[in-house]
Amino acid sequence: MARRPKSKPSPNQTATPRATPQRKDPNKLVVGAAVVPPEDESGPTEYKRQVHKPTPTRQRSLATQMSYRLDQGNGVCTYRIGVEDDGRHSLLDHSNVAESATALEAIARTLNAIVLERRMIQNEVGTRKEDDKEEKTDEIITAPGIPTRCELTIQRVETHLLDPPSSPQLNNGTTATPSDDTTTPTTTSSNNNAKSTVCETLSARNIRVAVVGNVDAGKSTLIGTLTTSSLDDGRGKSRTAIMKHRHEIESGRTSTATTHLLGFRASGECVAGRDTIRVKRKTEDEVARESHRIVSLIDLAGHEKYLKTTIHGVSSGMADYALILVNSRHPPTHMTQHHLNLCCSFGIPVIVVFTKIDGCPEHAYKNSKEEVFKLLRANDIKKKPFAVRNEQDITTCMGHLQTLAPILETSCVTGEGMELLRKMLFVLPKRRRHENKIKRPFEFLVEDIFNVPGVGAVVSGFVNAGELTVGSTSNVYVGPTDDGTFLRTVAKSAHIARINTSHVTSGQSACLAFALNKELRKKLRRGMVVLKDNPTSTKEFDAEICVLKGEGTTIRRSYQAYVHILNVRQSAFARSIELVNNNAVGVPPSHMGGVEEEEGGGVSIV
Image (tube, rainbow, N blue to C red; front, top):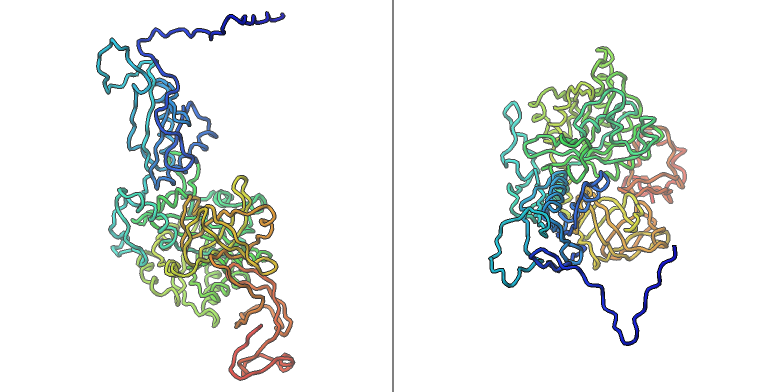
């Protein structure tokens, strides 16, 4: 049906707008009146018009947004409900605003946060008739049609700050306080102290433990059982929870080096890996905020074809201790010997853990134990086995980990020995003191590289020395590139344990986002460093080598090897070899040809 054309006004007539029907309500509402300043994209304040029955996907998005606002406000944020982004009133009634406030309070509880104040505000956008001389009251009217907005003040609860400062006691009455613990505040009155305490937990109170062993020793299963606080079903339940790639889940073999956080409260109680209310597993930031002490478990590969990956994990992991896992049902293999030699060559104290102790025949376990004792007492290891059967044994071996090798028996299916292992991990003293290198120049070791949509180039790694405050004025140098030069860029933002932060310090595992274009991103690679000052690079270095027990290899001039130096993995060859110890045993005369001998002793490769 054709529409009737609109009649145009004559030149003598003026077009008047259509009259708006008057409200019968005694209050004359000003629609869209500004009640607060416009919203700022950064900062601890968030505006919401309404949150109505959010879906699970929407709830995750709102939780991420609330976590960001809490980080911006050092643990405290404000939500203004019933307000547009430009600060104008949304003109919602009390029931809609109350529903939105209840939904946001539920999301806050999932982030370990509480609502300090819930304030309903009315009578902001209406005016009484001039002849109505009744005074406005503060009483909240729940009847429909009354414009209402709400302000929520939300504070994150740092659970470990609520723990008593007293030292935890073991069952036998001995004190189990780690020697490196520092004094922490016991209240949440200071938000700055709360945030600094989380950063301190992830640096000064973070123990890094490498987990190595043969392919069937159950490394991923042990880590999964510890971090999820649930026993294994004997069919790969625990290892599936922490494995990264699909082929790892299908084959049951770890091929990459991954890090998982195990949190403890000040009393020594282990932070549960799963929430009792929510079924899902806790994230790294939730574990870090609830913990007074962190144990970073580094899951390394056990198969022989992934040996280079394991060597790189031990070299770059900055491990304080190492767990050598041995299957109690089978004697140790040559890979167990390689892992033991590797840890001892780096000077890392070892703890031997016998796994799968449930249902193990007594003669098989006895045979495995005897073989492990032989490896530990060998001349190149020289460790004295020490069986840990109770909490008193843990206290006994704490000060002698350089000479003793504690032996524990565990089962991830029945839980036997798991509580003893947790207590031992809690009382381990910190060996590497990276926090003492905070006054040195900033040095960040790049472990991995990512390209995050909307963010750009992101690198993950370890802060080896110094400190850095990120932002638009934080200029850093990344390199060296293929030609030996360094890229000058800006460190825009940083994360530690998935917590947004503006400051990183030595001893922390962090992620940095750089302002690099697409061409410069292609030049980034693993093994680089991030520095504040523009340095110089080199392609030659002197090294003193110590040959461990292994396969027979002839080391001579032009010998090519794969060099592992911290996070650097690089193929190198020997330009010249100098023999410093002419009385070295086992060097045949045929290998002396072409070797330049000088007085002074030692073997150095250039």
